[in-house]
Length: 334
Image (tube, rainbow, N blue to C red; front, side, top):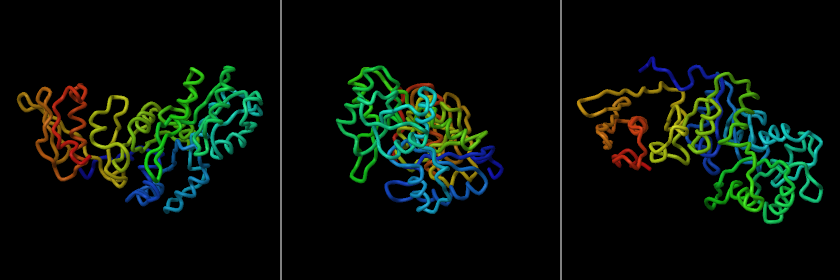
């Protein structure tokens, strides 16, 4: 095991999601800052966020406050990715109707566009991102403008956004309101679509990049679509139940309990057959599959190893989870 590869072997660039990976609420996640700083001593480290309400400089300032070595140019935001999409459709100098806040308007202005809030200004496109101040008047102006058939770009379509008091409607909910009014969908810049990943790879001149996320449906799906190595860290939204049930497009290359494990040898999955039983093991954790029945043989000394073995066992059946009898021990910690 001492000679086993780490998830970082051969990787020149590490890209990380923020909420659930670096911090949770206002607090840094245990071991995240030290691990990322250690990684940054040998590799390029960048940060990707779908949140369109803040500038890259504001995000970098928050991360630096946790002790990370980060500058504004190390942060790739969904408004920056939206600017790239806009440039493919509408030339700089054009008037663009913006639904969103400073995190979006500042990027478009710096990119040479004229920002308006009114459909009466005959905008060439609509760009929509999240801001807590967005309400019916802003959504209505977007709808008025889009009925003319102009391009529509959304920074992201996350349905929810975490707040101090709980989970609130995200940009996807607001985009859906406009969609209901105009009868068409926007082009999307943020995760899980590929433009934001492409922007990061190009900015950091990555040849082999690894992306760390805590959500399968946005982070892992997006990284997989973009052809990046993907890591699910179990410090955020998705855990054992979601991982075991993941379809092919949302399965990560690596699963880690926290970011320290990126720097440690990654244990291999070992499989063998015993009569009519297929056994899947990761170190001292093992899971048996007989037909549609999946059972834990040994919980082992590391819960993450058991989850790795369990996920591999379930995925190897080729069946959806609702067609299997899965041992509750595989997601007891959720």
